[in-house]
Length: 488
Image 1 (cartoon, rainbow, N blue to C red):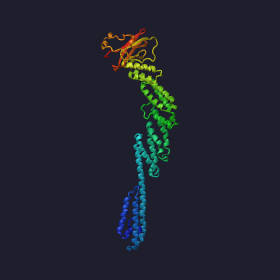
Image 2 (image 1 turned 90 degrees about the horizontal axis):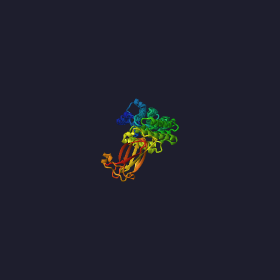
Image 3 (image 1 turned 135 degrees about the vertical axis):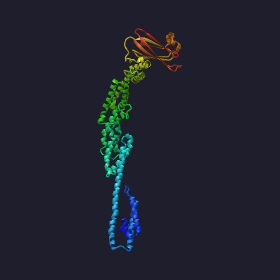
Image 4 (image 1 turned 90 degrees about the vertical axis):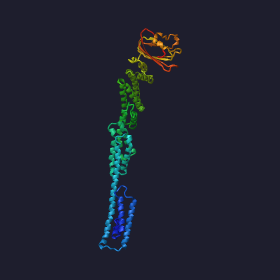
């Protein structure tokens, strides 16, 4: 009876017609099946198993006790079959336990495969995103791959991890395959650095295979950014990283020739290009990048770039002048003279700046660039006097270009506006010669444009400007009296 009750079916109680005990066994077995099925990874709680085992032992002991005391009312044939039947029925819980173990193992495999699927979806969701945004998803996926590939390497999911890692490397290397070098740098650096966070045996030789693509991407990204003012990242960042990380690589040896070619190309564009001002912007960006590269290697390139920028600045100013952009030309050439005071072109730049300032008021003065050198031959004297309040700057351009500044006349005042309507009434510069601040110009013969720029005084905060033209002829001397009329 004890063995029949150990089957969990309460058959010992059935033979003894103890229906309450049999019902309790049936209920306990049914409850166990409800809890255990369907099988999952965690299995049946240990408390349930212990409780069920105690119940079976108690039922067996009780069946043994009752069997000894009971008056057997069953036939001899049944008694002979009871023991073999009990032994056979003991195979039911044993077989059920084995089947349940197999089901539980399958549930574990399915759970691991589900985790692998989640990791795959995270990797897939990173497609099309910037790497910085996708990296957290990638890190979560890698953590899952590592756990499956190391702690559960024998599982069906664990055996799929190497193929998933191959696909992971292929997806993150896609920008490099498409020659999108700047976009490829970050994911390739990530792939190369994985041995620091992911099991090295699991990764195998995959990280080492990223060296060549990363070096090529740093080179391609850096050289493409040379001369691009708005490049992100700037050229020097990528190229310095290449030189630091892969100093012996073929890509590192190609950096200096690429830099010099970029300088040469833009320098040639300055000489014959239609937009030298745009080219000089590129040259300035290029100079900034070259100056940030190692001095020992790029000192010569740095000097070449500086010379190209200087040439470009001058070409930009002359281009602006010829394009009638006189205000911009004046600014560019004034700055050139300040930036390169020792340049052979500094004096010419100052002349162009003066001519541009005059032409900004009188476009006729900008028909042609002022000559780099003043003509030889005779010079005519022009004495310029200041018969007006405030200092005055006189700019002139023609066969030669320049400017002079006359101090303020302490006792001079503005002439009434009425004399402006009748110039014959003007009696400017007729007082004692010592009264008026003077300057002498020596001018070659030719046509000149003058721009008078008078500073404000204590009673006049604004200055006055005035344009005039004069023809200087040989063998004459000239006087030029600068005065001011009120109201004009």
